[in-house]
Image (cartoon, rainbow, N blue to C red; front, side):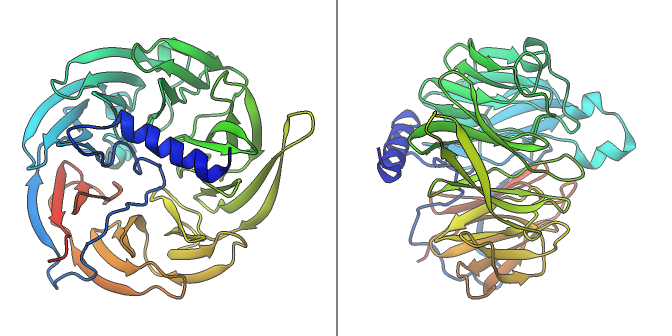
Length: 418
């Protein structure tokens, strides 16, 4: 099956499974294709000086960095309340529908002064059908009814798979493909695992990997006709057979802090990875050999775009994101790694309707033309103040709205054109 047809079938499958009401929207971290590209049109191409209209603000979702997922008439996120992790469901007007406990927060296990700025939820809930799944910082994976919040099952990953708590807690947003949930406990009893999504029953657990767990989320792809689940540990890019968990290939790539956060990007059978703290960027070419095994070679490497945790997106063979020690927003050519432009700043981003939405860590969001020619900022505005810490949660565009989360607050802006 050609890659285009495979991706079309994948999107159709996701569309069926996350249908809620008459809409499918943004069911998981970085959207239905996990590429952080919204397909909406009819959005404002420039904002008023004060920014777009603020429709509502919710201020009791708990502190954290979880983004939002949206399906039908419901919004889901996670946050820390009194060092406990909660999953929250809202309606499209910002009204809280339910809030359910999902175990202790990372801060409960790391009561050190240095840890306070980093406390709060990490992973974004994943919606599939009438169920929402969430992995807490301390490894409690739970499935909730989207309508009532009733817990359907839960699994303690640290205990079940003999895993150690990651330094900053689990940050992963779990992946659903068909009837299977994929995640990385990082334990000796299961580094990458596949669970039956309806029950939490373990289908397989790969025990070959001994690395510290990464902080990114897995993606599903087909390369050389072979389906793969690809993620990063603290030190390597890893590819697993989704049917049996066998390691298909790996490639050493990381940084001095052993802290890989950015999800990989798959395009034209190539795998792009980015690593902060000076790790830089790399493009890999996995190839299946005559015996069925894979070999992996680097197409190019670059010290630029060493993404910290704000994400990188691919549009028209151009990579957009922010570097860490390499400093600034970047556009790199996907095929060659050549720098197209660089601009000052650092943060997270998303894309819709010809524009990049770049959220600076200090709370300024910029509307930037999605072009490889230069950084061309069209508009910008400052988000409201009041929450704790930096603006690290990734923005989401869905249903003609821009959703931005800061600490325990969620803002919804109207960005439809008149």
